Image (tube, rainbow, N blue to C red; front, side, top):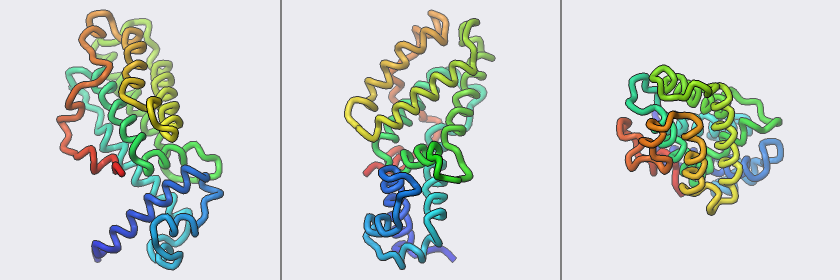
Length: 221
């Protein structure tokens, strides 16, 4: 039986509130009272939707994973410019991290030693980046000296930094900051001709092949 609209909204409010509290306090120190208060409901209403804090964490984790899948999509083996898609996707991801507390909490839970979840967003992102670089290599778009594993670690580490700094906001996760990273990185990955054709600032419609609404996916406040 489908939930009523009001119940759906309450559940979404609880997930968002839990994400904010998890990000601020960490999973272990997050309290049910703080989460229910942030959603504007009673503890009893919270327990109607979620049996315990673990279930709330799993809901946040799943919602964040779904957003990440919307952002990345499947690896397109025949994409005309896999490196440009990688740039575009990282720009969108950084924007979502800035505005979406659920996505940020999903990444922060993945690195929280007190959290025992089923999904690791960092591994999901790292796997997608690696597959994109493998596609680029198979299409002779990477320079011979590039070690894919090293490039994956560098790109994942930078995005991890953006995730942490997104909690501060401002220029740290601005489009110009991500663009600056790619302006430095692309000449190291691609040959001169390939790199010259790439836009470190991203394209205007990075994921036009996918039918999704960024405002809805990113959960902009």
